[in-house]
Structure formats: structure tokens, C-alpha cells
Length: 198
Image (cartoon, rainbow, N blue to C red; front, side, top):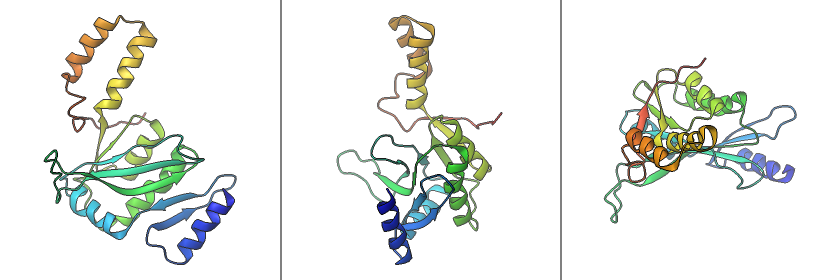
């Protein structure tokens, strides 16, 4: 890990176009923020204008660290097979833990980068991870935060199955009534809910 971090530090010092910030904290692996200026222009033009959602989701077990990428629909392109805009990757965050203060490094940096941009039309999507949600809402209180229905459905299903011990037929009936049985073909549907932090 030390060699990898040194390589990243060297790349940043040489002006690598993707590495924008390396944050050091005592006793922790440094966090790295990655994006290109083109990515940020797309985020400003497409996401901050409210045309498409900016989604964040942490990945697990791909290496010794976590990666939290952002994604958005690139509306200027259409896929031939589906007629839908493709998902493009936006700013990414490499980190070793998922605490609020760690995520705050990432979202505070993005907020600073977007300081001169009106983000009141920005819609940010994520799962229900508490520290991630808190960092998003604290850094972008004016934006709308939404939760992915796929994550909500999986969480509900898990609670009904293992938490309550509900029969499968009853679980499926409840899921269909809540999610209209469209979550698997329409992952773009989100419950638009402002998150209130307790």
C-alpha cells in the first residue's frame, strides 16, 4: 500500500490530469480524489442544471481500499441498442473506511470545486449508508437527495424475510404494492425523499 500511495503522490506532483487531491490523516490510509476537468464540466452542465441525477455508491472487495464512484447519464449520447443515454463515470473517491469524516473529505472538496455554481437543482442519489448520506446532506444541503429503489427494495425484502419471518407470498405482494413491480426494468425510478438527519 505504501508503494501505491507513493506512486499516486508522484503522479499528482507531476500534474497527472486525474489525481486532484490526496488527503492524509493520522493512522489512516490516505484518501484520493480522482476526476478530470471534463468530468466536472459534465457534472456542472448536466447534473447541477437538474437534467440528470448524480449517483454515488461505494464498491466493496475490489482491492485493499474502497472506491466510491459517481455516475451520471451522458445526455448528449444515445446507445443504439437501447435508445437510452449511457452512464458516465464522474468524480471518484478512494478510501479505506466509510466514516462521516472520511466521506466529508470527498464531498467538501466537490462543494469547493462547485462553489461558483448554483447547485439548488442538483439531485444526488445514493444508498442508505448513514455516513455517506450525512456527508452528502451536510455538504449539499440545498440539493435534493434521493434513495435508489433497488437498495430500498433489497433492504425491505431482507427485513421482511429475516427480521420478521414473513412468508414469501406476502413479501412479494408487499414489494409489488410498494415498488409497482417495475424496479427491475426501471432502476432510474427513485423515491424522492429529503433526508432529515437525527
